[in-house]
Each structure stands twice: as C-alpha cells, then as structure tokens.
Amino acid sequence: MVTLETPRLILRRWREEDVAPLAAIHADPEVMRWIRDGGVRDERQTRDGIRAWEGEWESRGFGLFAVEVRATGELAGFTGLSVPHFLPEVLPAVEVGWRLGRAHWGRGLATEAAAAAVRFGFEERGLERIVSIAQVGNDASERIMTKLGMRPVRETVNPTCDRRVRVFALRADEYEPSPRRPS
Image 1: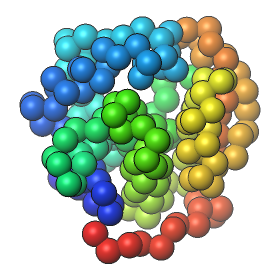
Image 2: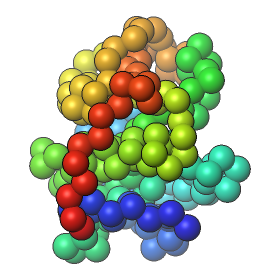
Image 3: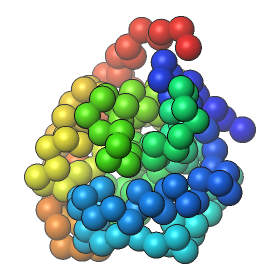
Image 4: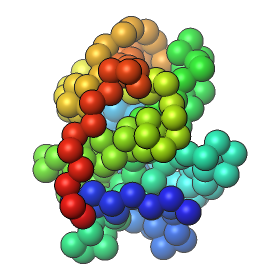
C-alpha cells in the first residue's frame, strides 16, 4: 500500500470511514462548481467513486489518494493520478487531479498534495507525461497547475458536460522536483 507524506499531509489509500467526510465535500455546491456539470454527489455516488479509484490502484498501480491533514487526522479531500477517460482526445494520458473541502482552501494544501502525486508519478511510476484538466474560468486550479510546472497545451470541450476545458501538461524531462523537506 502506497502512502506519501508531505510536511502537512498524508496521502493514503481509502478507508470506509472516509466515505461520509468525502460525501460531505461532494455535497457542497461551491466545491463541485467546476466538476463536470457542477452537480453535487451523494453518499452512494461517493462510495462508488472510491470503489472505482481503488480499482484503478489495483489495475494500474496508481490512483487517487485520500488526503489527510497530519495535525488533525481530518480528511481534506483527494489528490492523485487517474486516466482521464472523459476526454478521449487527450488519451493516452495520466491526469493529476485534486479536490479539497472548502475548509482547506487557500493554504497551499492542494498544491502540496498534487506536487507529491506528480513526484510519485514521475519518480515511482516512471510516467513520461502528466496532464491536468480544468474548466475554463477555474483560475485557482490553473494556478496550481502552473505551480506544478505545467503549461497549457490545448483548449477543448469536455464531451460529458459541454463545458470548455484547458489541458495543461508536464513531461518527465521538464519536471523539476522541489527539494524534499523532512516529514
């Protein structure tokens, strides 16, 4: 089981007790505003999502991590790597993504978590390229992508919801990891 640690976070696999706090995050319209059609998700949809993410870990050797705040043990949301099947025109590809509850916004936690996932993808899984996809207008996510060293490579439409998205990418030969800080 893969676990990553950053100065403030633990990135780990999913547990049953993560379903309710993640469902609460998914029930927040402001959190979900930039996800697909902007609709919220209930506990069953959240549980199904976690099951699918765990399946990706088993089949691909990477997936979405639960993001836990080290100081409190609270589930902040998720980050990690997945295949963006929803946007076939960019395939084959691996995407880094993240979603944190509003209580965890504005403190650099999404960047810290996503940087650990990118490092894992390049250094531990030997990926050659990682993309990230955000709806046009989601400036906060685009700032994180830029901090990760990614650059915009295309703008298109997500066929699952007809919303415009920007695709950012980073190749392994462009990747410059930030110095590791002690955990």
